[in-house]
Amino acid sequence: MRAWLAAGLLLALGAAPARAAEPLETRAESGPVSARVRVSPAEPVIGDPIRLELEVVAEPDVEILMPEFGEALDRFAIVAFAPSEEVDESGSTIARQRYTLQPSRSGPQSIPPLLVEFVDRREGRAPAPEGEDAYELLTERLALEVSAVLPPDAPLEPRPALGALGPREKPGGPVWPWLLAGALVVVAAAPFAARALLAAGARRRRRSAYEVARGELDALLYGPRPDASAMDLFFVRLSSIVRRYLEDRFALRSPELTTEEFLEQLSGSPELVRSHQALLRDFLQRADLVKFAHYVPDAAAVEESIQAAHRFLEETREVARA
Image (tube, rainbow, N blue to C red; front, side, top):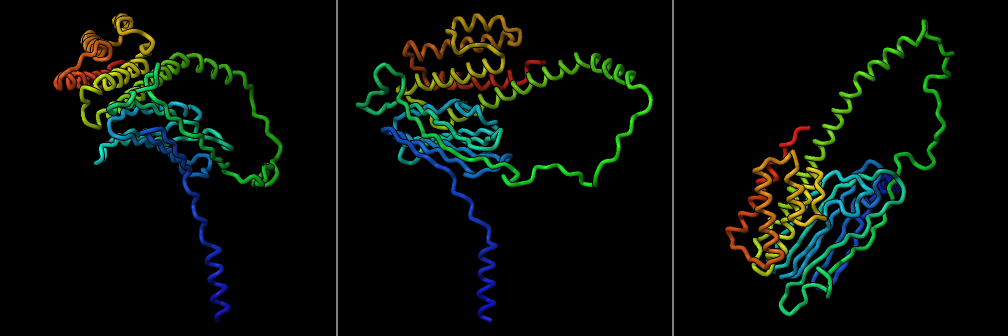
């Protein structure tokens, strides 16, 4: 009886499922800022979603500049993206970016290094290295292996499921009338299909641009409103969100243009009505005053700029018609 019990116990232990591999993780630190990158599962199979989380913790009075959406991750398809930011009881800022990725192929893959920038606004500290806008913190590369669905030793020789196939039967009658009719149908439907594809692509771009901008804006506004010392950085990030949205949504090459050049290009866009052009003109000119003229707006002016960004995103989300 004891022998049977021992054998049953060994069989049960042998049949227990293997413990899932621990998530991949790497950490980096630079002065008052630390970063952690976490990837799971560590051993994905092609088709499995890969969850990537970047968490950055900064001491009080240190501003974090997280990587832009999808930066360095173009080798993966991005299924979902969720940024967030909070301030803990000690005053430290905790910023997170969560991605759901889809690998395009099996085999060796890697999560590339992610660049985090920060500005040190603590008393007596240099905000950034001399000649630079911000300090930089670069995480390490994380290597992972994406397994194929079939094991390496699976037989790949095709075999008929129901035995050998019989001789191929020749269809009766000439084929060319059917080919001609099919060609005529394709030619007639081609303009409509092309128009439908262009419209679908435009709608996808609009949705993607809005969702990215909305996520970045929500992350920026998650914490408290900026004080006078952080006002310029806040308006840099706020105006950058709107400019990137304009580039993605309306195909306007705004980042490399000055505000005046951009506004001049904006006036010729047929997709933006006059009220939206005026709204953007006031918004961007106020942001330039803060960034370059050291203008410090009061709380009411800050809220007015925030509401202008909100209003522009919402009102232009579905304005264009492809």
